[in-house]
Length: 434
Ligand SMILES: Cc1cc2nc3c(=O)[nH]c(=O)nc-3n(C[C@H](O)[C@H](O)[C@H](O)COP(=O)(O)O)c2cc1C
Image (tube, rainbow, N blue to C red; front, side):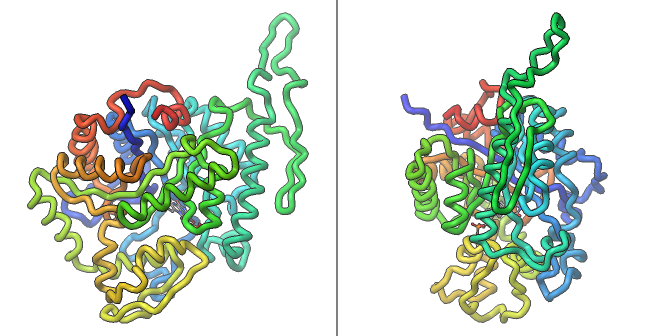
């Protein structure tokens, strides 16, 4: 019988909880407690991985300053996910731990060394979310004036990934011999320089860590543009994506699978997870009213536009809320912009904000069983491979987490749609299980 199960990932950030929500306002220390609870919950629900996104600046897009972001705590504070990944690895034993590291920010050797170390600390459960960074404000924190154009960013990232992949492989898997008789720790003949001389990066190698348990960590990526999708199809073990509805999901997945096949990869080695933010409650009415309450909450429109503006580097405060948007392009996230703007729909900006609702690929509002049914139908129509769940409106609360892990996921498991028990040890093996 064909395995109809799909994969689950969880998308989050190392920021604060929903500090100003009635049911999420416990003061959280910056000791990782909330994320430890989150990771344990995801592992109980047998998720493949938890991914911590990251950016490297306080946005100053909306209204041309960082004031809105600081006032509401949007995309700030954001602490470094690397040490958190180590902590999360110690409180879990099966869940994949994925963090975002930018090719703009780290010298390749440092990234390879860090990722190798984290793959050891998590016992083969580490993944790297490969981003090039998109915000000019981040570039300025690294002594540059602006981000390179997308094509160049990805050309550089191709070379970067090539180099770090060679560094991971610079020790053969059996290079450490620990032979007491000959007093030999490692066999130098099995450890090789990489002598990488690229257009943008150079490194002699070898790496100075022992080989990571997975050989290399799992690679995760979120290409949206054609160039980004090509990059993802070439390198990623799992792609994370946002798009509109079942048709958009199918188009996206078919496209990246075709790109993978065209360069000789087995498309089944590439798992596409679609971003969703379900709202589940005891009854259909309660779920719908929760959803509507958030859309109607004070400041929702401004907060959404400020947050989204930071993704696409566009100041939406310059536009009339009750008029349609002019055509817009960006050097940042073009796919997300197109999805938001719904070009040709004639909708006003206010309507677009409402539609963007839960930043969700599908609108999933209802009882756990109802939403599980919709998720199953959509996945069957698309062909795979799974979902990346996140909190609606970037509002992280333990209550929401429990609604997913103790409500929605059991309903999915009862339908035989998601994993009920882990049978593999490493992140890449879990991704390839079905
Ligand atoms: C679900 C999802 C998560 C993302 N997470 C990050 C992130 O943590 N940091 C970041 O700089 N970019 C992030 N991005 C942006 C992507 O890396 C990429 O730039 C974006 O999808 C646009 O695609 P393009 O680069 O092909 O235009 C994310 C995108 C998506 C869809």
